[in-house]
Length: 197
Image 1 (cartoon, rainbow, N blue to C red):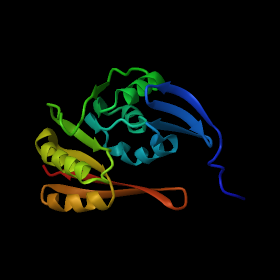
Image 2: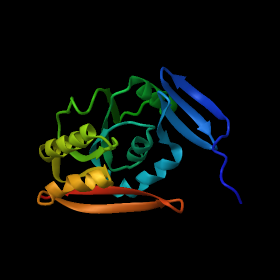
Image 3: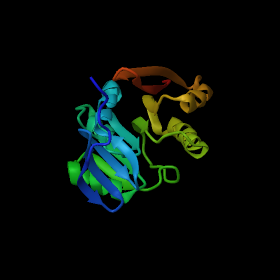
Image 4: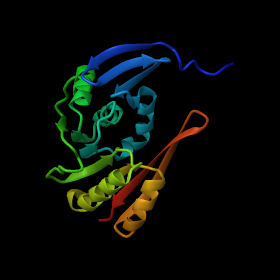
């Protein structure tokens, strides 16, 4: 038993502008400007969140569309509003999955454009590896407090940055931690912030 061959030839399925959907080593991968944006295997990470997806959902960051596909599969979801800054990523998603009456995708920077409306769930998927994105997530939590229904959820990837971030909000939100093993060593973790009623 050896290691998988990650040097395997890649097969480009679809290319739009700087976005490419491809198969490599048996996995579907989304690449944008030579950077990996999503891997199909990761879509299982969102199944942990299905009990929280309901009503009107705001999704920050489209990526490969794994989260959107999971959200749209939940019968309790009425609408999904997604912000994605890269039009090529949006075009790849639509070419792959088509339109859905429940889904609206806006090509805009979610850090600069915040929607009107009240949401049941805000899913913030952007990586928080930089101070700018960390501050953006903080802005969304502050903004979300007035645009989130009582008992609604703000969902963030669980990492060092979000752990630091949520300490500020312990009085306003109840905090749940979810995790799922992905293989033997990789674990996907989520923080679910539940707005106090």
